[in-house]
Length: 242
Image 1 (tube, one colour):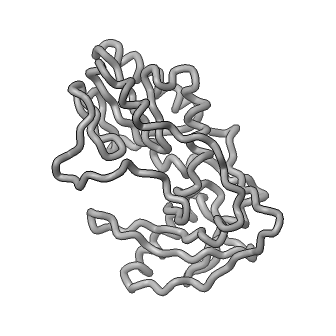
Image 2 (cartoon, helix red, strand yellow):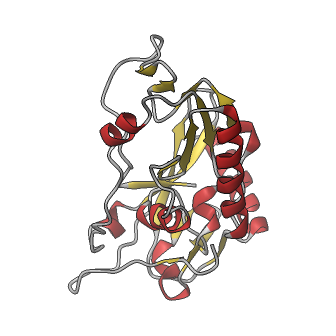
């Protein structure tokens, strides 16, 4: 979205935070080098000489792959908290009653499609054994700017037939004909503003889709029996993952 940039506002008495890189295993170091090269190639990061410097670490995903994370707790300590409201799940699920067709859309690297304002890019700097870099685009964890961008795009149709929670988009309709019309509208708006879906993570015109943990279906909301029941997810505040 060309007219939206992510900004970071610091409290008046902030202190520049920099930290020694964490120790990584050999597989983690190999994966870090690969991901850094890819992020540089895409222009999502650039070499930095910023006095800021957060350490990197990895989260181990269920499929055995590694997710690169940046430990921004030092930065978050001095960041003015954004009070932008997040959607309520209970209100969403009330609105789904009577709908029979659902599409789940996952914007491709959604967070990376919003640029970080040039003046605050140095604050996103992170350190590793392979160099010192800063983000030119938002990384996962800086959540509210992306939510605001999505709300602006869909403002006139939010909770009529589309619901957005961070980088998950749900389109819902009563009939297939109606659903195809709604879906075209949503995809056209994303394309107009420079957002693209990751097809491998999208599910189109289904009677049941997994959305934020529970399944939404024409029979109502229910949990997957294979999953441990627990509270619905909340966005992370301490770590950011690319």
